[in-house]
Image (cartoon, rainbow, N blue to C red; front, top):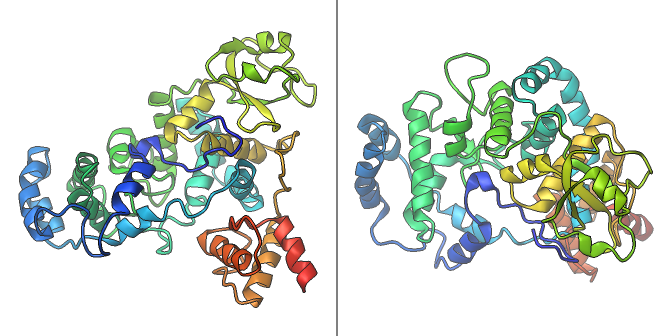
Amino acid sequence: MRNAAVPEVKTPANRRAFLLGSVATTLALVSGPARAQSTRMPFEQWVNAFRAKAVARGVSEETYNRVMGAVKPDTGVYALVARQDEFAEQLWQYLNRRVSDWRITTGKERAKQYGALLDRIEQDYGVDRYILLALWGIESGYGDVVANPQYMRPVIPALAALAWGEPRRRAYWEQELINALTIIDRGWSTPEDMIGSWAGAMGHTQWMPEVWLHMGVDYDHNGRITPFGDPQDALAGTARYLVERGGYRRGETWGCEVRVPDGRERMADRKTWRTYAQWQDLGVVRPDGSAFPHPTDRVRLALPVRGGPGFLIGQNFSAVMSYNPAFSYALAIVHLADRIRGDGPFVQPFPGSEPTPTITELQELQRRLTALGFDTGGTDGRVGRATMQAVRNYQLKFGITPADGYAGVGLLARLRAAS
């Protein structure tokens, strides 16, 4: 993520192994909803030609013919890619929406419900249970949207469309389609059960097929690996990912919020690693004045927004970024983890920020917008795309700038005053 006053908050994930921006640029040029970006042959002919490549990489002909012979390409993925940049959020908005009252409350409930499982995973992999809970909460709402057709779609038709029709990253999409077919070939899933995002990420912690195949763990010992259903496999596989691909270190924290002395902001180059004790000697301290718990651990300094809070971040923060390379995403994960643990919000505010709205406040905001004719898709106190679009439409109608779609306490106050 770039160090800028208006931070990049889009979240193209490393585990998905591609950049949304470049794909969006490519697919935005699609001439029609039913056409691929670069179609050198009809889809049926491409399926026949692709068979040899899939079989050469280990997929049985029987599986290939059964699955691909019946598939129709989900060309709707092209429009979904093209609209990824519809909403732009400042970092504090990004954090407020993801480290929400609902996710904190539900995360604490899941911590109790799955305490025994989280004990085992911590013992086996050394990954902080609250980091896993935060990943679970942000990736799928603790499994709540795993099979929701509003957010998820059949993966095989989506990957087939991308492998057939996206030329710049065709090799990547082809390999992920083969990975998905391999999963089916092993008997771990069926085409009907493989539901995920338009890009093919599936389950509780949104695995791409490659991650399912190579990082998955049969943690419940039922003979197959799955990111769906009981979350044992998903959470254990995600812990394995953080350790093996992210370099997660047992017993270390991710870092903490800090206060940086005036005039020393240039120390935040994100490249210089020092111990907590060395940073403290330079005047970098915790905003509440408490001591650093592990003074010999090595960390680096980040100031994502000028005038906002600073952070000392260690290797385990980098491990979270291996799951998704956006700084904003990693900060949301570790902050949500701390809030579920019982810690408070950041001490220092971001410039121009608002407090995080409660579930009750968001429900009231949704009710008021819906009553005015701006459909939020429900009044559950959770902000999804429908609520953001309703807010944006309201902002556009009444000339509120920026029309950013942010559902916050400032907008709620305006709605109350207008009534």
